[in-house]
Each structure stands twice: as C-alpha cells, then as structure tokens.
Length: 107
Image 1 (cartoon, rainbow, N blue to C red):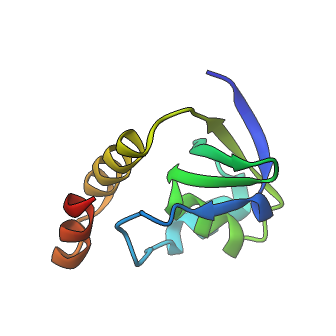
Image 2: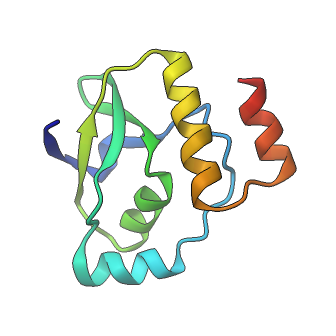
C-alpha cells in the first residue's frame, strides 16, 4: 500500500457517496495545524482526476484549510466495492440521515 501526495484540485467527491453534509470544523483546525494525517482512499478516473471513496470529510477540511495536496492511497476496486466502502465508512464516522442511508443501501 503506497501513499501518494495528490493535489486537492485533482480530487472530487465520489458521485455515489451517500453523504450530503460534512461536519468538518474540528478537522479544518487540525488540517491547518498538522495537515491531513490519515490518507484518503481514492480511485483514479483519468490522468488528473480521482474520486474519493473514503475521506470525503478530510477532503472538505483540506479544501477549507487551503491545503495544496493530501496523502492518498490509490486503490483499484469495482463499483460495488466502492459503494460498499463508502457506506461502511460513512456509517462508522457519523450517523447518516435516513435519506442518506436509504440512498447508500439502494446503490
């Protein structure tokens, strides 16, 4: 598992991510002081575009903290694996709204 620094402007929230809202206040302050410490898990969509599978809150915090790049693990996984990881990741972090949960289960 190799950790790669990827420019923030090459990262996008995964279009199938069930989470619509991100509570990032504490992460922004930490990001400003320490950078992003835990790598994001991403899948590569093109030469300069990556979708974030795990770490969307960290991406939002990095953008709010005006960071240029963040540590990422580029993973190869199919659409089903991506949807599963996103749902598990979001349910472990903070309760999803019933709408977000339903959206994730549908995928």
